Image (cartoon, rainbow, N blue to C red; front, side):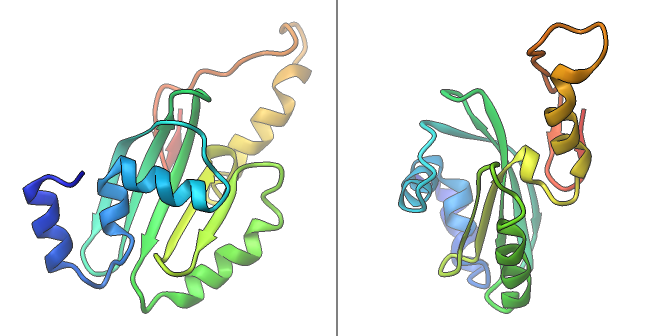
Length: 149
């Protein structure tokens, strides 16, 4: 459920149809379930907001112990959605989906196209010499499209 301040923000920024979803974890979970991505409870752990342009969220799925991202684009950014839809085929087997209606792109951290090293590290984690197999990586910080430490 949106707080009064979040509700006011979504009323002022109508260019971002997905903004209310990223401010309401319960609503976001429902949309994700509709996309076939129900991973249990979701927590928004990071937001980067560009009024009228986009909002990027870092997500934490506690049941799966998985980091993910969601980006809501303005209605005028259909080319960005198309680019992400093309990328979706290459992101497999990582979680990745595009919701055209909400202008929303959702994916696991390993599908973050701006951080290709995350996917490579995940594939090679058990292949590093001297380390046990399988090795679990514990991220300290994830800022979608910017940093994974």
